[in-house]
Image (cartoon, rainbow, N blue to C red; front, side, top):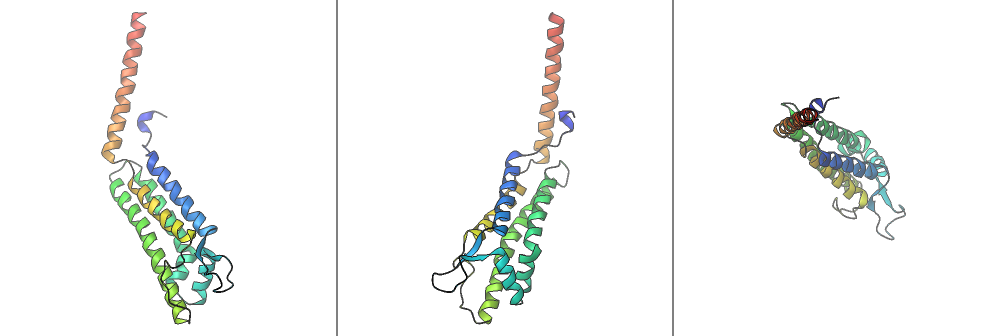
Length: 188
């Protein structure tokens, strides 16, 4: 495939996207989102993403239940798809970068809102009142960091003008190599 027809990919943006996907996936699958105060109850080490989904279902917190069911994963997928689409040189690249960034920011905001709704439902059900960040564990911070990395990865993409300049440079380099090769053939 000739280098002129290859789409330009920004390595830093891709690294940020990959780091964001890993951070959110690890957060959703393995890490504790909240630690339990010692002696407060027998919940073990704390609450995972799955535990929070079960609590949201039981407490009739619809946004939280949706978030911990599939919405969180969907936001990750949408952000990644928008960011990857923004890397293809097109007139829509700037808009796709913006939408990818906004999807990552919505992921952060919706994470907070879902947890606030869940804790409000717990308070109404008789639990103690505390904020979203009270006893926050590595899972919550990893989710926030993951969405932030995804948002940044969506924004860090080659602009259409930069991609065009790079293609022009590649064409010029190829032409210069051809001229040099022709001149060396004539000298021999």
